[in-house]
Image (tube, rainbow, N blue to C red):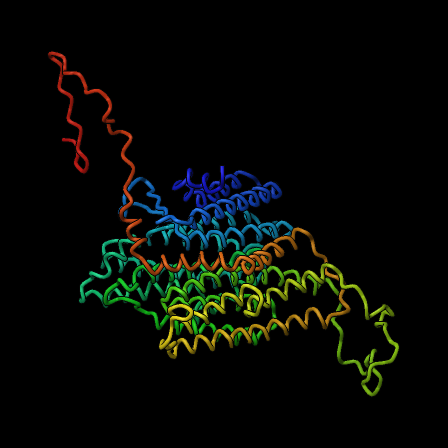
Amino acid sequence: MSLLALTERLMPHLLLAPILLPMLTAALMLTLSEQHQRIKLLMNITSCTLGLAIAIALVKWSNQEGVANTMSVYLAGNWAAPFGIVLVLDRLSALMLLTTSVVATCAVIYSGARWHRAGVHFHVLFQFQLMGLAGAFLTGDLFNLFVFFEIMLAASYGLLLHGSGKARVQHGLHYIAINLAASSLFLIGVSMLYGITGTLNMADLARIIPSVSGADRGLLHTAAGILATAFLIKAAVWPLNFWLVPAYGAATAPVGAIFALMTKVGIYTILRLWTLMFSTEAGPSAYFGSAWLILGGLATMGYAGVAMLGTQRLGHVAGYAAILSAGTLLAATGFGQNLMTAALLYYLPSSTLAVAVLFLLADLIDRWRTEGSDVVRFDDEEAPFLTPELLPREGLNLDEDEEVLIGRVIPASMAFLGLSFVVCTLVISGLPPLSGFVGKFAMLDALLNPLGLGSSAGNKIGWLGGLFMAALIGTGLMALTALVRIGIREFWSSISRKPPKLKVIEGLPIGLLLGCTVLMVVYAGDVMRYTQRAANNLHSPGNYMRSVLDKEPLPSPSAAPSHLPAAPDALPGAMPAPAAPTSGGSAP
């Protein structure tokens, strides 16, 4: 049986697997003491690998050729929308699940080298983090979105403090405080939306918003603005992102890698709700706040680019790279154009993978720096390889330790770190030929050809489009400059260091993540077709609304089948049987 056929047989119940699998795994881990770290590590890796296989199956199912509707709706409790809990799978949520599973699997493998032993309950918190992420991507109503957000955040509090230390505690408290404030805004915005519309189901909100009265529309926009502020905080949009870099930089390497997904949750939520609630079908509220999304994204891009130039700590550069990626995605979202949305959906997993690798590399390079010898000093009066006239000495091919300088073989571990850093630099800065360039080039193409290549004669990109184009190119140059400067300092000006000690369990996840960015280039056509279909579905909210609101519950198994024979007549003197209550009524 093929993977697609097996997935078809398991749908729609397979939608529960990304949520139930980490929840059950975490529950089983809680029964084990901290002395069984290896067993917990094996359980964590097995669960993440199985989750990755499920995510791949869901992506393949959602991308079937020749199928009119590849959305799947699961009615938890068998209650029809908008009254019951609804889980919804489409191409966008499947893509986010796959990205999360790839990063999580590689992060937990990397943690097996040493970091998972730095504190208690690492694996349990890691699984609850995955549960919250999967639920946020699959839920179809705002109340359960808040529930899964809180599960995700509660686990992230413990993960950020994992390993203890003054810096983690200090920045962890800031992280907790700002996220609690964001959660409060979330509740306020949701309460206002419910008071206006009477529903929290996303599809039902999209149905009701066009018919909201003019007297209530200002209050509706205020509620949407408050709700968006909560998501913008989680997406680390300027000036609400002052907490991210210190917190992410203080976290352990595998935690920093999984935290690279956190800002993308905010971007995903904004993209999902904005295309549903304020699409072209939203009447007077169509494209509400689009200019603010673009301007906020541009400000975030500029801030992150300048900040990357202003820091020399690789861990902080990785945090600013996450902010730069979030700003780029937010600005692209605000244009509300399907070609641009397809491009940003291609760029989203690519940038997430690269930022996750950068957090892992920062840990390895920092350890190499502290374990190796001092860097070369430039304050000596004499240069060992130069004459007093600052010319190269003839015939000299020895270093200070009288070892061959030219022709020396680069250690394999150092070569691996260097090449991985180069690949990260290319992806984050958007240089060819890797996936970062493909994503940014697709955005530029959407700006210059908003109706498609060869069909945009007479269309103008406008001043916001011009600013976004300049920001894409300018921030890419800033990121390139910052990363090249760090690469020169770490790999070229430290020739006296001993070769870094690199374990296979540390190099393997880095290679897998970077390999995924390469695969996105090799199969760029297939990936772009997938993201284009996902973007077309996002900008046609009617399909989402019909799939959710028209989904009918399964018939009750207690109902008497029609093929059974009728009940015999009552015997003489027997009491008559009470009449069964009809649907929607109650027994007398």
